[in-house]
Length: 276
Image 1 (cartoon, rainbow, N blue to C red):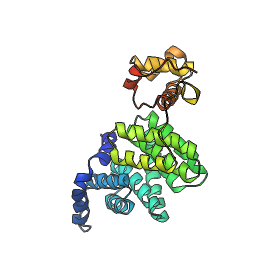
Image 2 (spheres, one colour):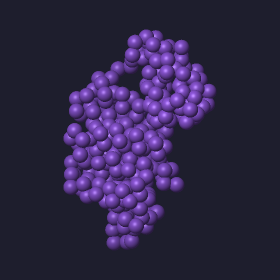
Image 3 (cartoon, rainbow, N blue to C red):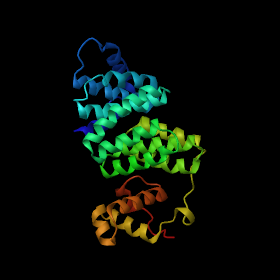
Image 4 (cartoon, one colour):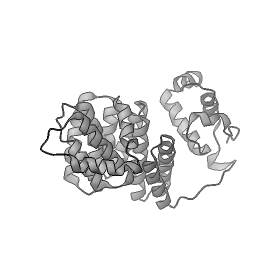
């Protein structure tokens, strides 16, 4: 249920529903008790505005949603990452840190990859120095293991944005291409547009198809791609090739990048004969 709501928070408020989300914010009575249901609606508004890059509005919605007790643990684990992202983008370091501290308590208590991945992703936004890279990589690993594709795609986006601001344009493009493909596949078009804008800012241009060089598959990648295209799962591929499922997933991400595709089903028609 909670994983579904993470996605719905970003998808439920399309551009044509913006007036509804604005009305929600204006009509919310701070003196009235906040229900868990209204907190989830406000969470959706915060995610919507974060996707558009309207961070001040996202911050307002997230702070309203976060004004509930930490006893609503699952709801807080949805809302607080939106609050950290919005506050950090608005330059509100203290508000971001306060939300992160609440999130960390809940995530450490839960101890799951999903919880700890969201904490690491949020902590990277607050600890924007050299430690951020390790935190983003931890978030991507944990969210991938937890099978949270929407949160994972946003992790790639945030990591790519950070890399670009660090002047690491080539590294940023890898993360941003992955984010843009995943977000488009998931139907999160506002976030996908954000990834495209960031790619443009790196100087990205449409790359030409090639049959050699950096975009050719290795023999191992081609074997994994063929098995995945035939419908085998990562654990099944791992058993056949004596690899861990995580290693299989890592190779598949490289395959997707090299072939410029975004899903396993596209592997059936992909040019897998291109082997380095």
